[in-house]
Length: 270
Image 1: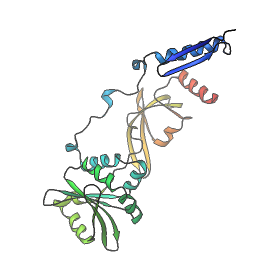
Image 2: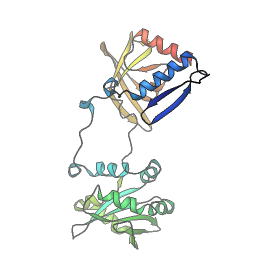
Image 3: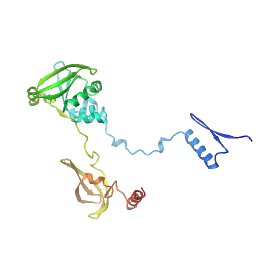
Image 4: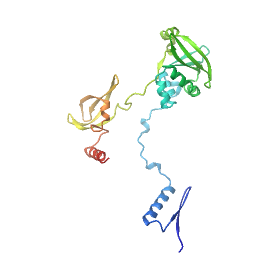
């Protein structure tokens, strides 16, 4: 008896399927897969959760502040490298010939050594942020001096220099050299999208469930949000923003009772 086979062909795929060893349901499933692989994907069917108007406009590098340029500089590195840079201090020394030197004050010799191994990466990244900066130094405090490894373009070690800390104190005191002050690498703020966010309380608060964040404040390591009822602007209160992450108490967005019940049902099912 002749053994018939069904050949399913899709772009880049040819597969033989034995019709005697497959049930009708299995053959139908194979046919569906083949159709999905040959059909063009319609991206208009996807719902993307962003609005063009909400995207921040791109700012030209020439219009960026020193803090924004430092943030741009940090974003080119991996998370482990950013953690090291977060503990460093930065300043730019402008020289008489119009060029600049980026000086990075490391917290210890270990960080200085690890960043020295990434000198090429640092050099290339500097050129995308500060066109006039041609050199950079990795410094550590050593007694009353700064021990600096100075690198030139391409990440090559140029020389090791020792600088007197008193020189830096004079520079920091001069308003004409304010750009020479060391700056702390800007940290990513906690709860960056807190302001304006909408929340639904699982329990009524002063008779209401739907609230919106209208203000925020930082107190030490904590962030607090001022909430206002969506239907009564007289109902306001402050809450630790971390409590909003508790899904047994708060849900993001304005949810109806039916939606909240479905969410709870889905959570219990898990």
